[in-house]
Length: 238
Image (cartoon, helix red, strand yellow):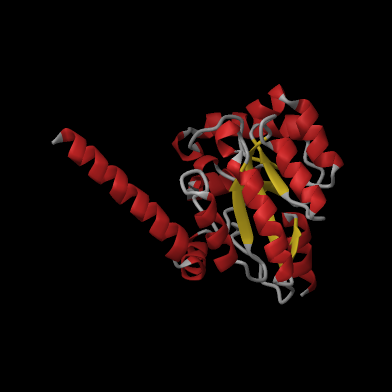
């Protein structure tokens, strides 16, 4: 009986993730949620066929070099959301990301849900990571750990000179297979979209292959893949 219950829960969970990945109403959700979080970047309004690719939980020696290789091969640039603890362990990879023309953004110091942390801990994690990555771009970008944002966190990020970033397309790439990830991204490519994938460790190595499959398809659709900074500057000129 217990085994049947466990199997049922696993199957239902897998179906929910798959349905969310394939069919969740991205545009509607982004518009509605954005109304409650002014100042948070979900997507950019532009007529140009351009999307921003963002990579969370970087860097990691098992995944980052492969992601950089694919970005280089396809002439694309991305914004890497850096976890401070990862940056402290792999400063060479942080330098490699920047040297290849990608943006460094703040993803707090530890890989955990930021919304559960106190203001004091959030501030400490934000400033520790800031000192490690020393972001050169303006505006400076920050994304909450686990992607969960609160109004309190938005105010704190902004008080420290950061623009909070959410995203347009979340393919749940940590839990779905490669095919679902690719389908979800391609369904949500549109002018000004902010796409979210993950770096971070050997379990995320599948995303190297996802990027290798996605970038040429996105280019075939007539889109350029750029950093958040480039995307925001395009919006200002539109």
